[in-house]
Length: 418
Ligand SMILES: [Fe+2]
Image (cartoon, rainbow, N blue to C red; front, side, top):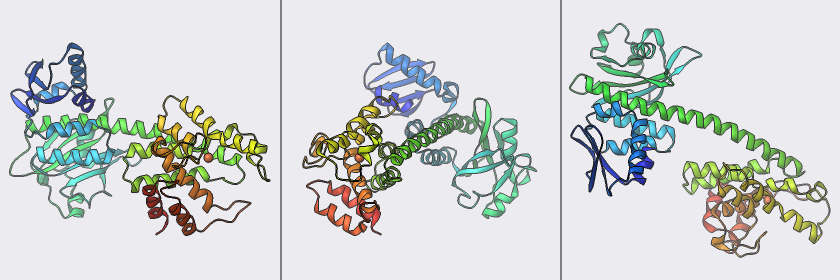
């Protein structure tokens, strides 16, 4: 949300209790007592309300108390609010926390209900890399105490504290001298602990407490949103895979075709360095690219002898039927229906159903066309033996750039010829 607001409202920075955070802009607006926001243009009332709502969600009370030391903090908050991969965001957040708290290490520990322990989820600096497999007992550790009491603990002489769990230090050959730990919550229930250790040249203070609690509230939201999203996403993906398998089962020759095309398309997408959300959509598009076969009668779909021209036209219509079906599902993006529509199009206009050419074909259509034909040719069918992959690649290379995108063929070659 903050990241959207920053983009949409052209926010340059904030000043909180006279401490500048980000950059000063042309216009400043007082939005809460002692909090100014700097923008490139004057905020109209609607934008002002939007901004207030966004900041309210970020726990304005905690935000007010933080003395932002670095202008980069704005970047960090933007990052936390963005949709980057969870692990990446958390790691960068820990790095930022370490920097802000001048600490040697930072960790996110999550509660493991089965064992009643905390486990390190993401670690940064300090003993990072050697402590991830340790079970931290809830009843015999400072992190556990913080989790149970649901409050921030500042321990400035860890070695003398009876709750200090020494096995972590032993395993990592590390000496924890001081630490600050704060619980992570979801709907008032603790789900883990965020901690920073070994403040350089100093003790942890009340000001550090505000900072770590602000980070905790941001991370908690991110963790749970991501968990809900991942749970939902795996349920939806499971359903889509079931649909894809059902489609393939109708076609006697291609029982794993959709899954194979999906695996291949993702590998191609990764080599071409597309981002996670693009890959996620591509995976769904690939699983569902032949969904239109639902509308093709069995006697035509599985006809053992040569198809008549009319029957071939009917088979070709699976692209249009599929695109129509998918475009009617609100939560699926347009790319997914384009994948179904265009996966038999060719760059020179010799494909079907619309003889589209070059850039009239979407990127999804181009990638799926390559993955689809590669799997069809390398698979064994009743009427043919599988082609060797080298032969298929050679044929596809001969057909680029005439029919297929050469960059995609190159990526395919990297995936399959190792
Ligand atoms: Fe197809």
